[in-house]
Length: 544
Ligand code: GLN
Image (cartoon, rainbow, N blue to C red):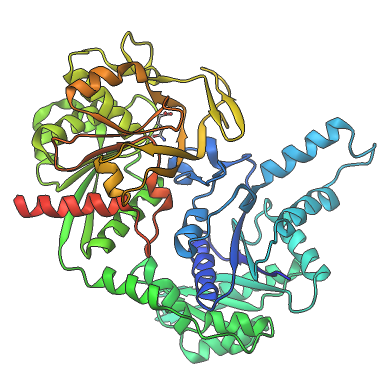
């Protein structure tokens, strides 16, 4: 029987509910329980696939090809459990399905309403695919009191009423602000938020109180009294020096013990926190540092490259070094070589990440050229690999080499492939089709060339599986001239049609990949490509 933990947020947004859910799941997992985390997003987009990274941060892609909220990335990084399509739902998806059924006549003429139809759909989603999980954590996006989240709150209320006693638990994340002028922490916003939640029929069992200053005992007791929870269930959640300290910090504050107590579990094994102790030890005690220049487009908003940022940190953990990341807007390189040299010369590694659209592409291509010519470790991801191939083609004499994503070109080194085989059969996409859901998405296998650098990076593997999210592919018609120029196609799709990895054997570390390895990296299991890239950057730092 799966137990349910519902996580809501109050007072303000951006309290780090996702990280909290991921940390609690990691702690339960460390005690030997099987966990899964789900995200309920109240917005009306069907999925985050078409949302701007500026507004919503990165789109996190699962093995089964879902484009999901970036919180699912936290969940996976902290628990190692692969997220699935059925772990993220939005109001948009719920309404889309209900309206489609209504049009088909499935409701037999009944009036279709928020209660019960929308709430039933949310409940069905929460209760589906329980498998043999011990705990299913459900994070509700937004803040209590939002109009959009009301059907989700109502669904939770009903589930709590319908399941067994001690089968569900409500964790509410709030803010205890510090008012400098008064020199005091204020509990009133928390009281109001809990009252709001209670008015929706949900009584929280555990309060996680985000605060910048320690919460004195008297304040803790006051929150307990006013909010009708045990004093021990008022968990102070102070700002952490790193996201990787959060599980250990919450454990010290008693979060997992209190949650288990809420379920009436008194005989839980003590958690094995060795992996988290090792991660924090590596993070806080680096033995060196490297600086990586990331030449991209959405550099103003760190969340737009969330997984990439974390994977670079993981590469640092693998090598026990601190990774300084310099986010560089590719467009500034379009002014000329001087700017490129000034910005990129101090870098120990250059990374061109995934992206969409033409803007900044010439700056990215110029960065590839700098890395190739100066023999600086280079890592190209998705669009970054495509740019590496266009750069190689230009070096091979195809002066107009480009991608059809950027407009018509007579040298389409990167272009759209309209049909390809996947495990589900023939897939297809059209130029100019709907933007939502027309990409090569999710896990695909790649065959690695024997004795290639890439196969060595993957520990000698012949076949790997990585996650994709792109519409365009490197055009295999250019493989021959590109190989003559020095690029080796070290990874191909199993049918041999789609280039997956390119590398340069005459370069200390030059790898371009069509997939997104950053999505699968974990702090306790850094992705080999990131571990290898940072190791090469460390070598480079010793040279300069
Ligand atoms: N824009 C490119 C494509 O659609 C690359 C996408 C990406 O980097 N994720 O193929």
